[in-house]
Length: 208
Image (cartoon, rainbow, N blue to C red; front, top):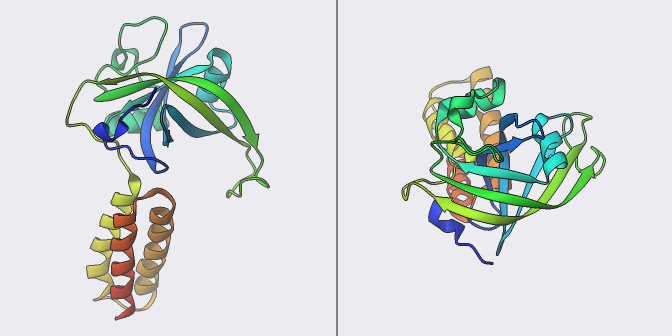
């Protein structure tokens, strides 16, 4: 089945920050902030580092839920702490965020382990590529849009640009370094418009 994920701002082969929720055989629910990539039709992919509860639950049940939200508290608690039970719906066999603007239930097709040698990263932890099929797609809030962190990187660079022009020395180098890092992020996760905007901004940096 083909799904129109553009209704929630998700386009093919771009990376979006969503909340992945899982459940284990003991009915314990877990949430984590992971990047989500839509591959087209009903196919999706996410990457999860070895050792996470989310990975263990997915390996155990063969299913997970992608929740589209921009709630900063949910992102923070899902990253540094266990999200309390009151954030989930009352469903006993699946973990879904109660206030998610949209969510997708994903059935796992295959899980492939990549070593740091296969997929260069800045540590020695294995990473798992999880390919799946959308089983259900629900929109609760027509205005919800998935978050692409490339746009935040662009906004940060725009703010830094005004500061870059009035500082010198080490601070100037700091802002130039932030520009280069944000440009790397945008090239990896964002659409052509955001990439073009970053190129325009980078040219502005070179004038000063």
